[in-house]
Length: 96
Length: 159
Image (cartoon, rainbow over all chains, first blue to last red):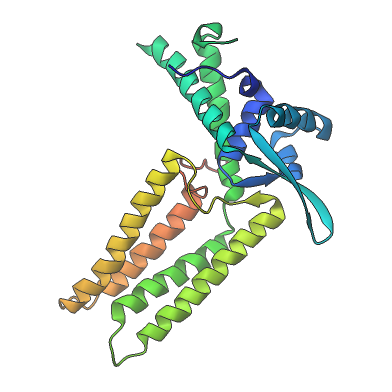
């Protein structure tokens, strides 16, 4: 039986992981616009996910413009998959 | 919260809906512009048609290579424009759903490519036209509804 992940379950972090699961990497600004949150709120959630080892943040310069690229790590992808499976199990238990 | 007992089914369903909505929004963001999608699809159809029509004594092989060059050019442009917008597209599938999608779409494209040529060699002269059209239509469909290369379908613009 899969277990819920407290790090991922917070609404904003859930959205961050869901968005990152569909792409290889997303830029900080793009993610901020998708989630409609402030820089500080997004930074806080990203830091929590990074400390858990679920995401990696890479700073790169494109045309002399510094950009932060965020990606789900394989551990993060596995944790997110497990979390989704746990949520589905809870919903399925109700339907049975 | 440490196990399944700690949240109820309603909260779990709400979380699943949020995940689905977030993924659909991302897929919509990943969609390439219609003109670029049309260029990618038509150039791909051109490759299939060129392959279907190629003989030793004709120039369709050249058309196939030109189609291939255009196809890769437009794909690179799509990937580059997505990067400028802050998205890097998954080239290789990273989930089981992505693997299934790539497998099924790969088989469909391969069958159409082979059928177009083989049927023409059997005497069905129209086969490359049909297979090229179907490949281009399928490519356009996948780019619009499955831009992330996952089985999950992207939402409509008004969803």
